[in-house]
Amino acid sequence: MASKLPTVAIIGQANVGKSSLFNRLVRSQQAIVAREAGTTRDNVLGRVEYKYHNFWLVDTAGLKDPNDEFEASIQDQITEAAEVADVILVVVDSTQYVSDQDRTVAKKALRSKKPVILLANKVDLADNLPSDEFRRLGIKDIIRTSAEHNVGITEVLDNIVRLIPATHEDEADDVVRISLIGRPNVGKSNLFNALAGKQQAIVADLAGTTRDVNRVSVRYGARNIEILDTAGMRKPGKQEVGIEKFSVLRTLQAIEESDVCFLLMDVNELNTGLDQRLAGIIDDAGKGMVIVVTKWDSVEDKDSFTHDSLVPGIVRTFKFTPWAPLIFTSSVTGQNVTKLFDLALDIDARRKQQTKTRVLNDLLQKSVQKHPPAGLKNTHPKLRYMVQTDNSPPWFVIYGSHLKFVHWSYKRYLERQLRETYNFAGTPIKFSFRDEKQIKANKERVAAGKDPITKKSKLEKAEKDNNSKK
Image (cartoon, rainbow, N blue to C red; front, top):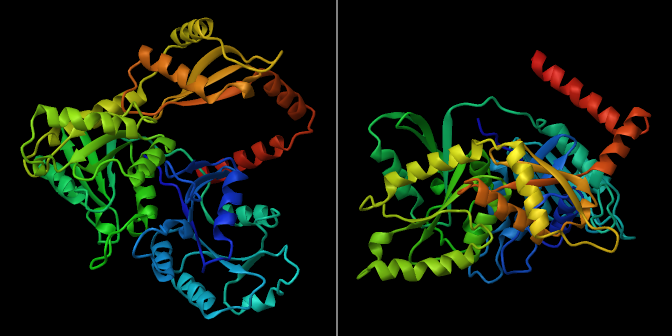
């Protein structure tokens, strides 16, 4: 079963340092960050790993686009966080007395019944106020922080992981989970209904409220498929403009639960920045992906040349995920709707395929001989051997020396060589590089009792033993 990562949301009024705290929390853990392609905006989504815990960190301040006519209010941010997040971080400026806006934020956060932590930021400034000033907000846990000087960041992370479950492997099942991802009004609900209606054997209808991710289970061939639709998340009666009206938290949760994501784009509005951002999130999460162009029936006077004229632009937009198949569909006519099931099942099978170590190492040696990796003087990377350590997504570990000098372009080169040998269409591939000298040095430190990893390993083992007893 696919796991769902906990979500931690940062909320607060403007200019209290939410984005700076977000960047500090994410960068300090070398998290996977989703950027909006082609812009220099602050990141709004980060995946953090800390002490055997993983979670999504969301900066609600970054969800507003200054170019949009309608900006999400602070109340919308709080409502979204309260409904979906597992932990809420309320940020205030420690140099300012508590304001009515701060009280509103704190009150709504506490009403959510979710764990709430108050961060009194900017404590590095000389005129910051005592903690008693902020106890009036009613939030029990208060941490004084400085994003600029990295003060209190470790304490924040320690408190977060205390409130969320440790990462663990869920038991595998035979269900393939597909999520429909895309901007508002791209046809998610129509495709959801078309996919469900194509099958006569509907196992269960688990549709929730308009605030939840809608689900339906169907049987296709010999497989059970669960379809997740994020279309029910919009607030009726409001103009859907830009990402501030896009429910990022629910979309993240749907992606995390999925094996394969269908990224939907309206044929009449292709290749937006948000489409690129969503593709990057899916790629970073290691999920399978199909780029689905919807509403093909709405294009008048189309012929084979119409299709061919659109493809190059889409390919350029998603050149960072060249492995994702592209398909044009219509929920009205049913064109290629059933084919989506076949694509998803094919991708799921490719994500689970195992490679042979001998073939991998032959491939690695031939790739290195053909194109040796560049490096610095006397520190050229040495790639000795490669093994597959995981699947869904396929994960490969390369052992050698001076591997920190391997350029990202060389990793892309190795990925191309691997894809030419094995069919991994529809799924990202992940690489890790392990320096043999560093591994040996770590083992020696652990054996000598000089490395804190020993304590961590014991703690991890004890935590797993306790979970198994439960």
